[in-house]
Amino acid sequence: MTSTADPRPVRASVGESAAPPPPAGGEPAAPPAPAGSGTPQHQPPASAAPPAPAGSGTARQQKPPGGGATPGHMPAGGGAGRVRRHADTLARLLGAAAAGGLLIAAFPPYGIWPLAIVSVAAFSLLTRGVRARRGAWVGLVYGLAFFVPLLSWTGIYVGPAPWLLLAAAEAVFMAALGAGLAGTARLPGWPLWGAALWVAQEAARDRGPFGGFPWGRLAFAQAESPLAWLSAYGGAPLVTFAVALAGTLLAALALALAGRARAGSEGVRRVRRVRRALPAVAGLVALVAVTGAAVAAGDWQTTQTRPYTVAVVQGNVPRLGLDFNAQREAVLRNHVTETLKLAADARAGRVAKPDLVLWPENASDIDPILNPDAYALIDQAADAVGVPILVGTLADGPDPATTIRNIAYVWDPRTGPGESYVKRHPVPFAEYIPMRRIARMVSKDVDLVQRDFVAGDRPGNLTVGPARVGDVICFEVAYDGLVNDVANDSEMIVVQTNNATFGRSNETWQQLAMGRLRAIEHGRPVLVAATSGVSAVIDPDGHLQARSGVFTADVLVRTVSGRQGTTLAGHVGSGPEWVVVAIGLAGLVLAVVARRRRERGRTELVTKESG
Image 1: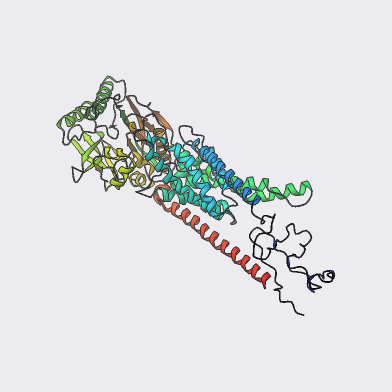
Image 2: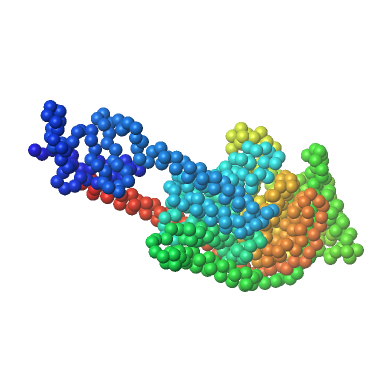
């Protein structure tokens, strides 16, 4: 008699081992049933399952009639499996928090730059062996552990809400990176794809939303590192790529050395580990060689025009307690006073007579074009020192009632204000308020920005006395394109900044490191003029010639080498960045294709077994 039961095996649920089909010839015969038992001979009871094959490890569970679970049993992959998965996820998230915190120590004022490589390596290992969703969670925790402390200075005077929102927004980009790293971890050559995705993440974060916020790029932790010299050939993105590649190769090396070797003698297993480690070692050696060559070459792409004696004036801000209008006038008078002292010292021969003088951003928060008293004070200082002053001040925007400009004037001792530069990248939620009505729900302090700053439309290439200067204002030093626009047509780069708003936080040191990297990138001296510090004179090698303290009045007088010519980084601009971004995106496409092939292969296997 032909059995009516389906002879095909039941498909195992996720996490179970599928039992093989019964041996040819059907199931083994059951012993004869006692007379009157009601059970036909040669058939097992309906509730009995066929024996599990020897060595299968997990017997297939059959449900009783009605589809209920077998009493006293948990499905395979449940219970203990869920506990293991949750424990693994928790361990990865804790590791991500530790790795993100480690990255903080690579940035100023700590400046332990190798920790950036170690942090990237740890992040790579933590996102390996998981799906994209869990990789995203690991990335989010990593980003929060990094950005929350890194950007704490943004909340000093406006409260925690804007600070934490900004940190969370930046961490979302790290979440996307975590998902990408998880997806590409199975590809051959995964360290390359991972490093490229780091650059892609920064490229996106540097540009949006609201024009982006590049703080915390891996490159900005490398001002003291030999890797900084790569910036002269591919800008900050190439430095980030090198740091990330060093980290992913370090992770690959750790996996190779820690991996299990196949059977064999101890010597054979050791040889196999070495062979697995060779690609990572070769990559690291190549990276060290390229970096060493860049360091040995030094600043060869630009040449000196002539030396200039430059005076950087830091007037400082008055103590707290003055009302707003009085403080604005006090800041202006501080810079005038320090410039008059400089003029007296130059006449007495105590310092060299400068060729040009640099004042910081907001040295005069009173528009000197509209205010005769402010005009007279600046004119007095310029006349006393006898050379042009680059003055950071404010000017009305197209609608004086609602808009304003952050502007720098070249103030000539004979003709007064001349050439000018208007800041091209005002800071959102600080110098202008997007979606003001919504932003007010987050913090009432948005109304401290009573007029929105409007952007300029021309690069800050100015002639200040005998020198050709490329001017950027405050956070603009973090944006590759804005610096590149002024560098090639200048003999020196000037960063006018006002860091008084951020107190004695790490912000000023982090920004100073960006200036040091820009000096190497473009082969030019960088002069940082800060209202309350840190002001600095940086040579084309990225070394500090001089710097001021914080919240103190000071004047730095130094001779710098004007430069001409363009580095390779200046010639190619953002080209290398987009090439690396394309590599990263190609890695994501390959990862998606590979995953679909694996899923199709599994489906075909199940179909074949079921047929």
